[in-house]
Length: 211
Image (cartoon, rainbow, N blue to C red; front, side, top):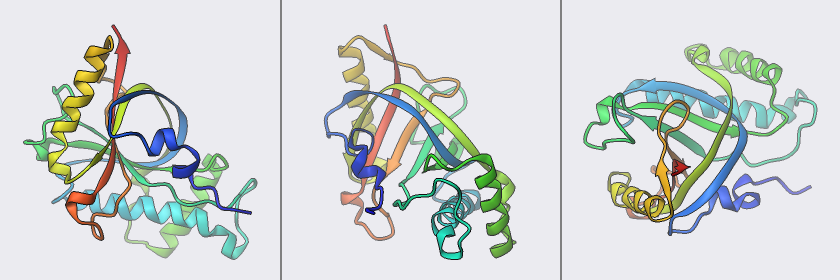
C-alpha cells in the first residue's frame, strides 16, 4: 500500500499558491511543545525539535518492533509547523525575536490517541533520558477561517508576504483575527540545513473573520 503523504493528499493545506487565498482549516491532531525566545539562539527551541521529531518517528517506526497502534497505516511524517505570537502585539514583530512565544508542532495520523502518545513518550524517554518529554502534549487544533500563501525565500524577508495577506483580507471584506487560539502560523516545507535561504518554502497563514 502506498504511504499517505499529507502534503500531497491535502494540497490545499500544504501547497497553496504564491497568491493569497482563503481557506477553512479543519481539526487536526498534533504533537506540540510550547516555549519562548529567539528560535535561532535559545536552547529550548532546539530541544523542542528533538522532542517533536523523536515522538513522531517513534510512532511511525513502531511497526519495526510490532508495537504499532490499532489502525496504523504507512505514512510520511508531516512537516514541522509553528504558531507564533508576542505579548501585546497584533501578529508578530520580526525585530523583537527575543519576545517570541511559540507552539512548535507536527501533525499526527488520526490513529494517534492519548494512549498512543503516552506509549511514545515512554519509549522516547527510555531511549533519550536527557530529554524533558513532559513538555510535549497531544493537541487537537481547529484553526478555522484563514488567509494563506506560499512564501519562497529567507525567513527574515517574510514581512512583505505578510503584508500581502493583510491587504488581501482587507480587500475581500475580512479582518485579521489574532487572539486566543489564533496565531501567525508557518509550515516549513524545506530543511534550512540543506536548502539555500532563497529557496526555502514556507506556508504562511493568518486567521481572519468576516467584517
